Image 1 (cartoon, rainbow, N blue to C red):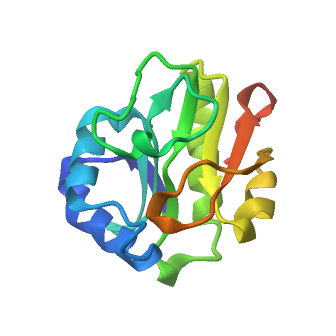
Image 2 (cartoon, helix red, strand yellow):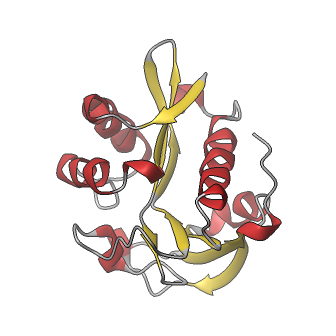
Length: 167
């Protein structure tokens, strides 16, 4: 397996994996992925196994300390010079889950964000994933104001100064 930056030719595979992993109300659309590939390819990575896209991690850069719903929208606040790296999605094709792919993607994203001079990683997750993200050094800040997809989310933040580049 290898991790590389997203390419525009990945679009169909991105949509396929996203729809395998998220319910329709939460899944990013083809149009959203087209925007993200164009707007922040420097913080959009994919995992590839045997020329098949099997995992995704992506997010914009912002000065916000938590994710707000407007960040998910085109022109929603991506600031290439921002202090904090968001994670909009960390997902792996179900056929490849529980093999460490997500952890490699997260560590890659955190390492790239640290190398780019970012201060913090921020994301939202559902309650059952809080412990998973704590394993990467994220701290639970409690229930988020985000209502994306009608779900209850928790704000998580990690200080990149504490991150070691272990993939």
